[in-house]
Figure (cartoon, one colour):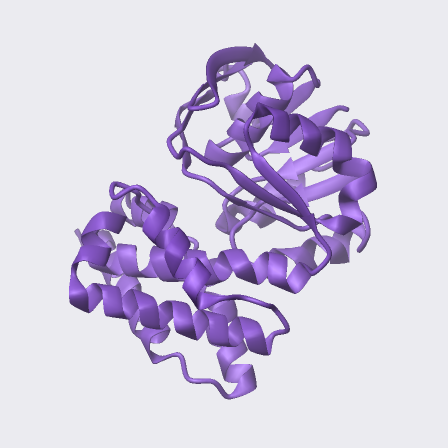
Length: 297
């Protein structure tokens, strides 16, 4: 299978490196000004292996790739889609973005069946162009079963590499299961400017985190998803004490965080359904204040 990676950061770079290591041709999609300085390879430092693999580079998705993996930040999606040539239709488009709203946007452009929603739980970071450090001991990939026939060979290669993978029939549960975990840990860790260990060891912040999980799960359930707050809290506990969310890293670095993509579906879903999410709202306001404070410096 031929793969294109739109957004070869921590997540896209990890997926691309794993597939290239398994023998599939991989092309990373870059901004035109970045191609000359980008190495013709992806190097990965991971619990699953340490290696470098050759990849092709392009600024425009004009070839008929079997799979287009989209792993850009939600804040970059609109501009990133300009790199897909008009009329180009990859066999499957697999978005690995945070949030939920991007699925409808992509399907409105490429068609319902071509877009295969997926989520990934992993701590992976691009430390330099083409250099990826996978920090967590796991990489958990969930994929909508509408892509089973087209993606099964690639998913099996990722599974053999070390990923935990499964196809799910229930798309609302697939998407909300990640968001109900991600939003609370991202919002709380960023608002508190603490890593996971510091967050859960502080009784007041732990209560905020647990309340935010309960609120997210309430909106998820009202949206037709099946989520379990106890399982989400258990997964948060399993994270290493040093774990930091990508939102926390972005705010600390002065980069635009994915605040609307991550918190927006919960706030808007709560408003539409008449649900109260006061802790989520409080944390969003605290993160917004941190962003404003950083800009003022």
